Length: 108
Image 1 (cartoon, rainbow, N blue to C red):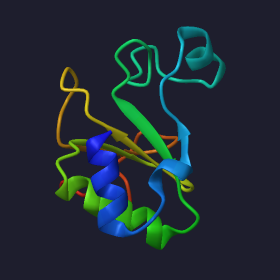
Image 2 (tube, rainbow, N blue to C red; image 1 turned 180 degrees about the vertical axis):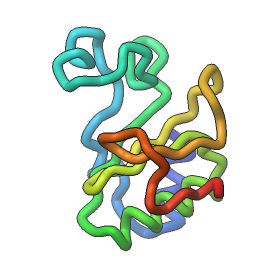
Image 3 (tube, rainbow, N blue to C red; image 1 turned 45 degrees about the vertical axis):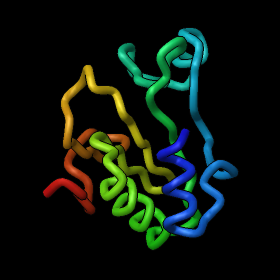
């Protein structure tokens, strides 16, 4: 939460108002097509999806999230997935829905 607050302050956008997915129950995670090992799952939720209205804002979020120490970033057309799950591979970025490397890879 502190990192999201810092992100919001650094880029000047209301990040908390743009969260479209945070903690999920197992059943909700299945309903939305989340991965079986999703970092969104309760009780240890370590991920958030932030909706973005433009590619410019999306790329600002990606860059600043990396600068703030986020080590797992998923990039969608209309959202950014930020993930601090230390039990998964770190310094990785992927594109939704295919899982291929994103157009903007903050760790490359």
